[in-house]
Image 1 (tube, chains in turn red, brown):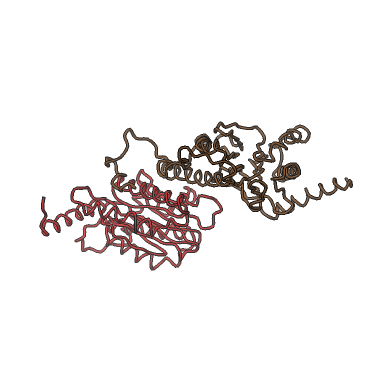
Image 2 (cartoon, each protein chain N blue to C red):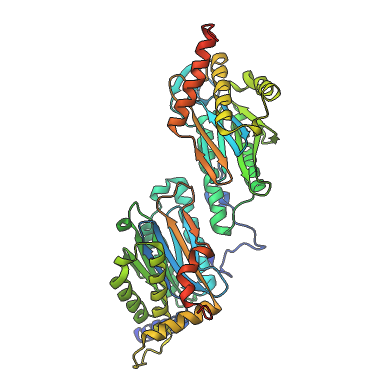
Length: 258
Length: 277
């Protein structure tokens, strides 16, 4: 079978449209660096969405569940093989995303005979201090980006930009965990709202729309927040925050609470 | 190495029927097999050995203590060896015998436990962890039979189901035995085994002791082992290492607490030796 350049461009465009359309409805993931550690936040309907990968690595993402699972397993396998055969210090998000996952996902995307990954992932690596934390976002076409202090993965790039703008403006005031949770939730709502809006929707969204989105989401779903603890003496630094720890941040948005 | 496509449901090489993922499948055999016909003898390969380690229950969990000496035949190879190793937040392993194999198996088990937790998103059961240790010892048997690499651990854990500390020791083939009160392994351990029973009968069971009491008894036992076994380092030169497991996880016994406890025990020993007490 032969492809002309026109066919190839068109095939790629169709794949992108197909994937973008399916990602649009994904629940965004927000990650922030705090003095306490790295916080990752999302709202899920039924399944867990935030996962421990290695001693200082965690992962969250949007997309097809089995594609996320494939990426999670591949990441855990790489990290543990590497950590055992060399040392835990040799397991970094940069190596994991840049040299293991990105080429493999790019290959699946570019191969016309395989289903592409419906996937947008966010990997967080805990450093010794907040500025040393690293975030990598990895896209379905293998493109990845390194960020510091905060990062997001959402259903559309417009939504991601709005989330990043919000985080950029307020991240300095969110050094305590509860404030960070609130900020992450606000960013989540903005991302959710804008990812779902049709790309040609010219009407400006009002701030109250985001609050309504959040209220809806918390009524039907569950807030999920994971922390990689910076100063823990435990072997395992990753933990999901308990309900009681999340409650103060979500109380304002609960329907019927007032 | 797998392609990421293999990880997807319906991927080419997804095993069927499905089985739980094992860390061993990922990194291969723990023990490198010896070439056929080779039979190294003790004269050719000198294996560094860790000596005496002790585990006792106390009222909040389990205390592990070990001296710091590692020997190779008659030579003291190292006097800062750490023989009480944290496998995960609820499991300790105190190693005796081949230091090389002990450390490698500890690293392997640390990874096997956390690999399970992260892939399966639940903690491996205590029973599962204990069996994994047995398998590692059994896998080591071909080497041990050739005279190198024999290694025997004591595994201690806090059991969240029964809310108590538990102690397991093993034989060379990987059979595991659970002890009610204490376990000891290494060259000095046989010399002091009866002393554990003497303490239980004349003072009180270890499980009724506070951490300070248990630490004191363990230090005396280690001191006796060092007196009776040339390979055991005791605590006069380098402080022993102790760790405890409680409901809240692993507790490292700090250097100040250890220094104080050692000073008290040493003072008691000195007085007895000089006939003051």
